[in-house]
Length: 488
Image 1 (cartoon, helix red, strand yellow):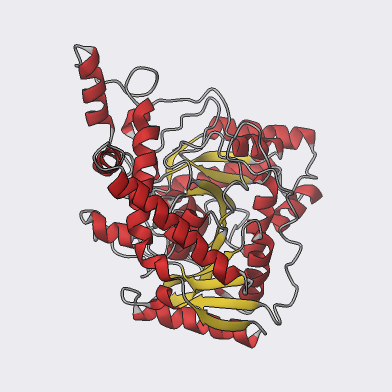
Image 2 (cartoon, rainbow, N blue to C red):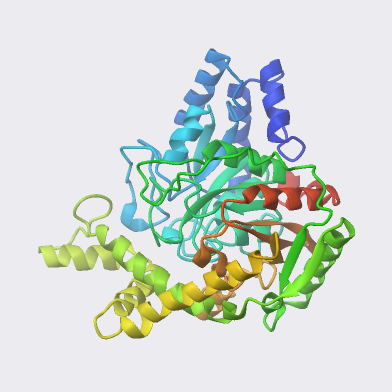
C-alpha cells in the first residue's frame, strides 16, 4: 500500500490528509486492498463494508474539512458494536444477517469525527472467550505467529492493528478482552473506567463489567482515540457524568517520584518465567526513570476468577434471553411450534461456550443457588474493590503482567474451559472494580510480545497514559514488525 501504518502515527496521517499529500479515498482504497491481500491468512475481519467505507472517504474528501484528527482515517470496529444498516453479528450464527437500525454512541461519535469504518473485526462469540476461537465465522490468527491465537475476545480488533491493516480499532473489555489481545499482539490497549465510554449500542454480555476502548500501535494514538469516544451519554444508564480531560495532557511529563505498586499476587504460581522476567525488567526501567516502586498485596485476587465467572455468566444468561428467534436474527427453519422455535433456534444459533455460560448463569441465579453463588460472588467483588481502594490511598498506579503467558498455540485451550478462564486471572479484578487499566508492550521473548499492565484510579486514565508513554519512549518496541505485516 502507499501509506504504511507501521511508519505513521494518527497525527502523521492527519497531517498528510490536511496537506493534500494523500486523499481519504486513496487511503481507504489502499487499506481495503491491503486487507484483501492479507486477511486470507490473518482472518481479522468478519466482513468488510467497502461501499460504506468508500462513501465516508468520498464525503471526507468532498468536504475537505480535516480539522478533526480522525477524519478520513480507516479503522476497524468490533462486531458487537452496532453500526446502522451494516451487518453486526457478535460473531454468532444467531445474529446472522442482522443489521442494526441505529448506531452505537461510539460509532456515532466516530462518524461525526469523519472516521472511515472499513469493517467489523472478528471476535469470540458474544465476547465469550479468550482466543477468538469461539467465533461462528473465522479463526483469527496472531500477526506475529500465524500458528498462535491473537487473544480474545477482541482478537480481530487487535490483529488488524498489529498487522498494519488499519490505523486503530475499537474493542470491548469485560474481563480483559482488550488488554489480553493487546498483550498478545504487542499493542497499546486501554480498558477505560467503567462509565467513561458509553455502552449504548454495545451488545451486552455482562452489563456491570463491559467497557469499550481503543487498540493502537502507540500510547499517544490510544489517548487520541479515547479523546474522541469518551463522554457522558444520557442513553446509557451506566454512563458517568464526569468531565473528559485531554488524555494526552500528561504525556512527556516526568514520572519522577510517582508511587507505583506491584502486587505480589500477580507474580505467583501460574505466571510463566518469561513473562515475569520481562515485566520485572520493565519495572526496573520505571524505577530508573524515577518511579518509586513498592510491593503490595491484593489478597482477594485469588477469588477473582471464580467470582467473575459467576457474576458474568449470570448477567449474560439474562442479557442473551432476547435472542429467541422471534424478533431478529436466526430462526430454526424446521421448528413447528413456539416452544420448538425457542429451543431449536438457541440450540442451533449459539456455540458451545455461549451455551455453557448461559447454563452456569441461569443456575447461579436459581432459587436454590442464588445465596451460595451469586450473592457470595457479589460479596467477593466488594472485597476486591476494597483491596484496590486501600492500595490507591498510598499509590498512584499499580503495574503487573497483563497475562500469565505469551500467545499460545491455536487449539491448545479451546477444549479446556478452565484453562481458558484462568488466562484472565490478572485482568479480571480490574473489571470487577470498574477501574481503568492499560496493556502496553513490555518487550519480546522468542519473537512474541509480552504485556505490561498499568492500573489506575477511577477516571484517572491520564496518569496511566503518562507512565505508559514514559516507558514507551525508553524503548523501540513499536519498530518491530510482525511476520504477517512484513509481507505487504
